[in-house]
Length: 311
Picture 1 (cartoon, rainbow, N blue to C red):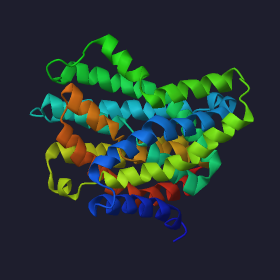
Picture 2 (picture 1 turned 30 degrees about the horizontal axis):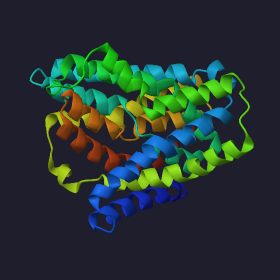
Picture 3 (picture 1 turned 120 degrees about the horizontal axis):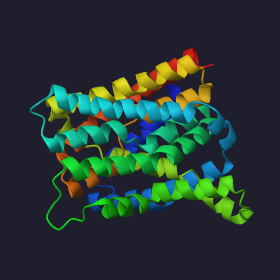
């Protein structure tokens, strides 16, 4: 019961978001603006705030980031393996399996980490975001450039890829936080307090948006590519990281943060990218809905593993 209680606020906020959208209390068109508020202001503020206060020396000297990169790389290779063993898999569906396997939802990861391990885990997750978000975006856009079928008139090529990646508020916030931390830039207290206030709103607003995005009708969209995508995340991916974290003796907070990166659902913005660049957007929505429902009860199990196996 002690492991279930920390996830209840997350479940309740996700459920509240769904209820507010399904009941029409907050109309569907308004959720796009709320989601954009979180994506462009609240979450970036939290990322800058967390990275600025993180002890990057401890992270850089340890195996956390290399292990996280290795785990994500193995998940990406798993998507290519599925392409080989499923010869009839359409290119667009492959890009979606790749995206839903490698992208991760910072809203849920940050909230779950704070509930289970407090501020220390948030610092590790902030570093995980700084180390992986830009690379994940670039690799996914490259995969879509090669195997996707972009709509007529859409921008393509390496220039468009870098333009898309570095316009991402999460990438910008990660780079800004890293620069402020590494160069020990003094930030006025009033500005840091402002970032802290915005950061405090980021997680509840983000979880409400996750709930509002749930579409139960997509649960019946069962297909072989969908089940293949679900095996990568949230089943195989966190087990890969957990095995490496146990072997390397990561601390509890680092173990939990990295496992949550690989256990939470894919980032919702991948759906928009799939739609714009010729991926299978409907498959993305179906996998994302299932991932969200499956990952929430799995997070206490991940926390249990971290409790038992971490140093």
